[in-house]
Length: 428
Image (cartoon, rainbow, N blue to C red; front, side, top):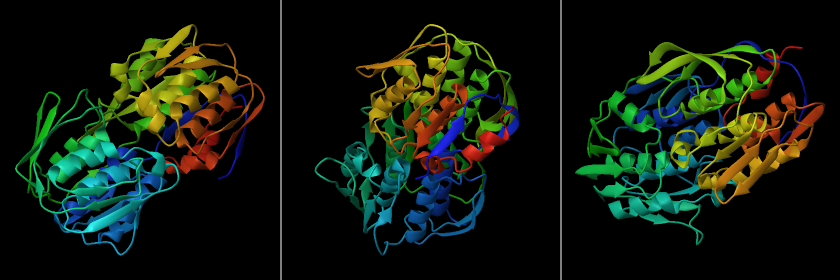
């Protein structure tokens, strides 16, 4: 993919809207496909990951008209998907593969999921185990990775205690539970993103939530609805941190999802001293929304506990950049899950920051950062990881001199217009 050069300097001005929330977009397409009637989705993410979910659903007989950000999904009803003619290509999207495995576990045919080189290194045993317990047959490689073949059929309900906090595994079990007989429940060790629960309710499914236990009854019919998708908080985080760190910035990020399971990054930045005003905006489809008004400010180091990590896992790279330019020491604990993203994201963050002259090191599953006053120009490798690519680009803006990001085009996975949008709002 294309490399990108970036000149240092310049604050951010004006206002911006980020693409639709990637997590919510996946779920809107999937639940729309399982519903009865036509679901209208507004604000759909145009990222490649969501495109993978759309392609897989179409291969399963779902008619999806229009293009992001506005599409219509003609639902086939619960259990109504048809066997695909060939492999289902999930591209780079772990969300696509894991959630769709839950859906197909309840369908009486076999389907084989493939993906790109990065996705076929990511762990799939974590989703296979509960689905097997429900009665589906799941075939994986010897390493427990894709290609993954799902042979579904009659499922039995289970109560499953997640061994680790994972919104994707929770969602897969709940989606399989729609096709199972009886009550399916998932018990989490810590709260994770609750987009699936919220959207199931919007489609008319009664969801029981008691602390960290989530349940639903099999056979619950989904009724088509209109889904308005808010701006993606994970994409917004790049703007918020960049405007905080770039001198002279005054930026408004409009219409960002304010789901409390997704705003952990704002809490961390507030502890660091960031000047961020949160203004409630119109709620959209069961999800709260806010505008973020950001001014440049000086930051101090921060301690992020392992318990906080599930609520900001995708924002760690850009928060680490904030820590690199903060006064004092920062420590992010319990980041082992980052080793299983599009890259070994934990090692990748440390390497990227070190290249720019920051002091960053990995200690076990922790990331330790000593703040520096300025960054030096560097050429860094994104490792094909969209979040590292965007973090590296922003680091280049904040550094002295001219920098570059190799394989920067992978940002299209979540934010296709990121570079153009960013440069349009840079001041001199």
